[in-house]
Image 1 (cartoon, rainbow, N blue to C red):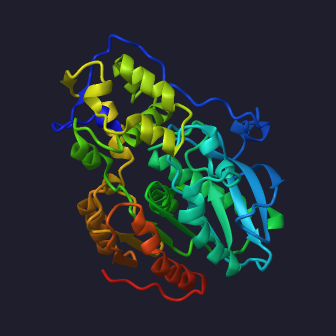
Image 2 (cartoon, rainbow, N blue to C red):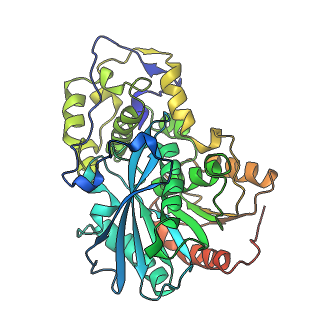
Image 3 (cartoon, one colour):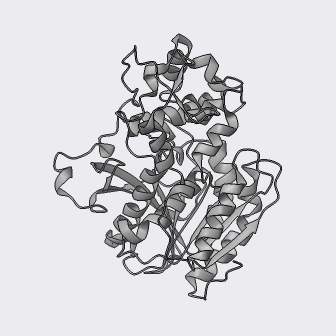
Length: 394
């Protein structure tokens, strides 16, 4: 992400000769996604519009509802966000609803979950669809927020938490979904886990009226500062994702995170190449590169604003405590996510009295732990929907 900003000494590039503007995604051509002119008059979670979507082949006997609702960005401004709700034929009125925060590695409108559902994206079909279909067959409705927001601010975890909570508010307010009194739980892995974990931690202050049965969070990058220090200035096969997150952070915090000011011509070209890209384009563009390839200056100086942005989006450094049960799973050998930060968060939650079930899922790399851990996750979620007391292995 902001490997551009955090080096081994946790300082940032500070060559301000260029004044480059953030690069935002191309506007979505579908007017449904546009913000209405009276958006500021709406309350967080208020429904702005709904639309019945075409059936999705990989989710048979399921109706698809797209909801546009009012949410809030990281600087407190109103935004229009969207969430897709899959309702199986077997869903009973006020039956379970799972808010599932999908892994979204993208910077463009076509990367939104509400768009990817209608493509042949292999990540969704292989990694997610099997699990989601199992839940649909159980009669659960599934809500899938586009939790990166309208500017696709990849990496802005607090934003994802707020959109997730406002999406749940919106789902409760759409009569045809029959979810006004449903038990609702949340789940997500990796980037989706970041949004889920922040939603759980922010709910007591951001959405205190919501009753949430629990949250399952997996493979969560709990401390972005430590992740960046781990990569430092070295070439990395997933450097494209770090570059994408730097672009996403700048979109969300243009005055505090001006990464475009520090790009050399190669960095500007890479930024343009992935500005509307999804996972594959981003990974291919950045594979094997490093900060040294894209930065206009290696001169380091302290930049408190930029560092504060990274810290604000690091759950280990966020003092909010969930008031709901938590299921946390990760691989102890995860090569991407610093696991000491996960353990620190688990200990802090346990000390605060959070009913937390922590599970180790041994996997050779980051993403496979999502699937390997899914049976335990589904078992735990089902128990929360049944209203059983939450276990804890603190």
